[in-house]
Figure 1 (cartoon, protein in one colour):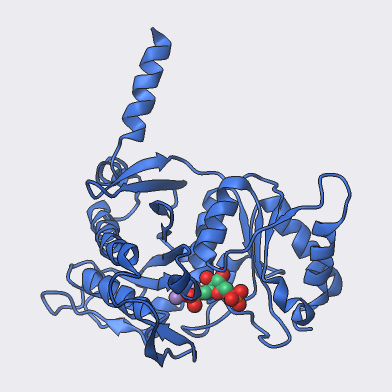
Figure 2 (spheres, rainbow, N blue to C red):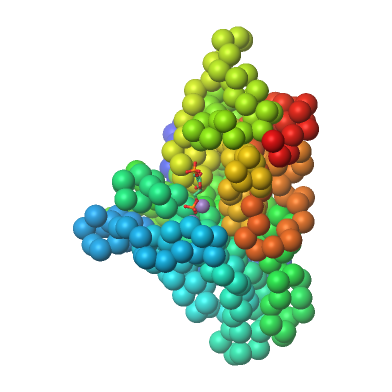
Amino acid sequence: MREIQDIFNLMAKINQSLGEFIIENQSEFKYSSGELSRLINSIRLAAKVVNHKVNKAGLVDILGTAGNNNIQGEDQQKLDVFANEVFINTLTNREIVCGIASEEEDDFITIKGRNQKNDNKYVVLMDPLDGSSNIDVNVSVGTIFSIFRRITPSGTPVTIDDFLQPGINQVAAGYIVYGTSTMIVYTTGHGVNGFTLNPAIGTYYLSHPNMKIPQDGHIYSVNEGNYVHFPQGVKDYIKYCQKEEEDRPYTSRYIGSLVSDFHRNMIKGGIYIYPNTSKDPNGKLRLLYECNPMAMLAEQAGGKASNGFESILKIQPTSLHQRVPFFCGSTKMVEKAEEFMQKHNNTRE
Ligand code: AHG
Ligand code: MN
Ligand code: MN
């Protein structure tokens, strides 16, 4: 009898929709809960619109480059531009967000709110479309978001200081993976939960409650094509991963979409590395749009994120599009990689 009840309870949990979950858990949030719920709701809505477009890629004119570069000199894809517009429009038309910073925008956007009073409380930083290089070849892409409370006084326009906060101040962070199924995975500082979209009815259901990264793993994810440019610490760590000893060699898996690589490693256990290289002394990934939110998710799931020397979440940002070396995933693997980095003390070789 008890067993049957347990099964019913489990089914009830699995069938909980994201909307229901947000309402049920909003009291855990230490600030005004309704606002953050509305903010997560608007991200959920934007993600459905982007998902719809991603699913039709190949059928509608959405593949290929948009013909311009973003501020970081990267080719903007049509889907980069589309996703950026959808998220900005969805977040702007609600009285919650006072500013948005995006990988695809030169500068941050100020939002006055419907009453023109600049009294909304949250800033959102995002990578609207992560893994652009995979769009044209039907491989998973994603969206990454990071949410802070503003630090400047309500009633005044946001300033750069509202965006340049260390990751430890994030009040929520998450990603959407447009994969074989579409999922939203997010945290508000009380663990990590994953929701899968049922495309037939357009509803996300709690499919991965209380996600935890295995403490140790057997997968390392790094673009080994750049090996010759890696610092000696990363070269040595890769050789360690490949050595036939104890539970090694590990498996190498690299999709080239941070969201998908992180998602796999979170479920199976693993480490994702995008180090500094001799070509890019700060690496490639962006602290504010990619590394901070993934670091919060990793830590909330019991994992770790570092630049090889210190916690990502403790870094004080100095500019919007700042890049940072990134080592993220299972705690034991990240600590081992840090050990190699620190042995050589090679931030820039
Ligand atoms: P974006 O598409 O937002 O520019 O991000 C791409 C990032 C990240 O998703 C991925 O892991 C990494 O760049 C891949 O870079 P390489 O092609 O240099 O390996
Ligand atoms: Mn990205
Ligand atoms: Mn991007």
